[in-house]
Image (cartoon, rainbow, N blue to C red; front, top):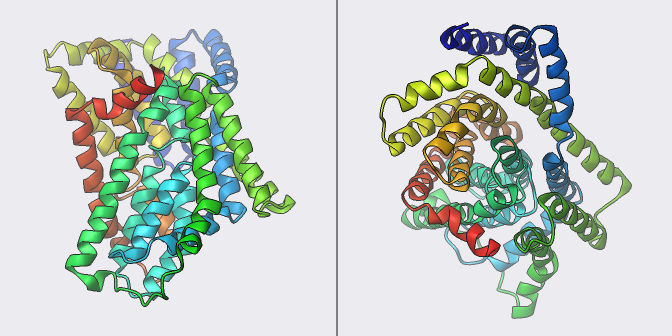
Length: 439
């Protein structure tokens, strides 16, 4: 069968099945069964499909995912996150747009502990959004920072989606995790600068607060040392163990999860009930991710055996396009997909084609991986189906409209595009830290 017809059958069938509202995991499983029967040898193809399913979810490289998710679940259910927010509220005082800045700084710290963008956004939205709106903050100034920093969670380790991307794309997971630190901190710094500038130019967006007299030096820094520094130490433990070669990403993730549980116990925030809630949340999120992965390996294999991958790659390389032109085309595809499908689907649809092109064009895999992650991060914030937009709608007061949420996210999408451009123009922003720590 010609590769063009195979492309129409596979992708046309996938779009048709997903248009009926079938979950992504089941859509890929259904098209895999058809593809295995047509292109992998009928009954033998279906047997291979079963083998792929077992091998894909038992891969050792994927075991950091539940550990990273567990870290975030324990952090939120134990109430440790609230103590950290209170510590920042004492420390950050005379700053324009103070509450929005606290949301950014606290979200950056949570990103270093949590492996879930949705959990970070939901937590900050439920805790800080009502306070900001009650203090007279404009909805854009209250909503935007929480969604923006929620997306940054994908870049700063630990990140479950980074582990998944590294596993599916064959990129060093530890290198990819460490490479996300600099772009993530760049975005956080840009967000803080933007909020402070906007609140200075137009104070009505974020009215100043009547604060009590500043506490003594020790009283001001004590909550930070007690409730924030230990969380940052867990982040340092995870990244340091990986970069020094003392632990694999899986072992580092296990250390991080154990450290988070110990911290919650020390703060007397961990009970049997919220531990069970954390474990159930971990199983639910990890199960969804792993169930989707079941279809990933066979889908890539079907695309390869049907000739679709070679056909499309040959079509692109045969045009004689410059490598940068091809890269821009891949980025545009990711940005458009991000408006309509979830991040795991973006990986499953594009990686079988993109990674051979990356190898053929001699792109640095870690550099390309960070570009891919930023594109997925932007997809969380772009209408009409950005995941964090609907997460925010779920925790926001009823009077907050979707149009307000869309407009609030816009500046943070632009900042994401700016960082994406900087990473493209200056690759060492993504590759410098992994190479430094590995040496």
